[in-house]
Length: 241
Picture 1 (cartoon, rainbow, N blue to C red):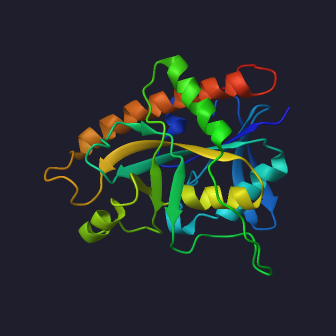
Picture 2 (picture 1 turned 90 degrees about the vertical axis):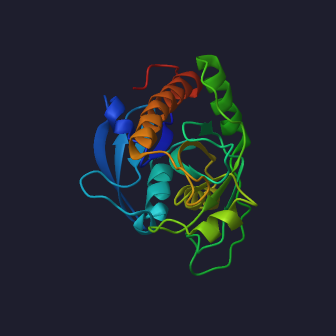
């Protein structure tokens, strides 16, 4: 049986006992070491670390994805917190993106050769996530374009206006994970929580408490989707968490 890989960061899945029955281990790879919480059915990586916060521009995506490959995962789900680039994409929504834009130095595992991959989000995993949400009665948007910036700063009003012409949500990590996964030939798709509006998108942005409330609600729903997904689509069909 091969576990499902899960990578999550700002969305605090650990607050919902996702670590229950998972064994903490450090996996060493040629790109560095990665902290993984492992069971027979799940290999979970906290994207930003645990004891100390790893900022988005310092995450070792190569080590994270290679660790999952070395463990033997069959597919990977990224769980991401994002900002909205459009007024109709409201905080509290959940989006299953179908494509992404990343033009700011996306990482690679290839440094001594020119290897050209076609980066994609795996359609089969996407459809499974959508199907799982439907069975749970959780409303998700079935497509959307994710624009990745490097961080750690947020975007200017002018940048948000420009990006909103081409994408729906914005974040700092998913595209890097998807690209490295493609280089390693690992199927990857993501589920994204919309937690706030981009800078200047609305006159009165949500308060911090409103953002946190929406994020908490989304955290619960996203966890339910991920748990049901693992239980339904992993080999053996046993309870994973």
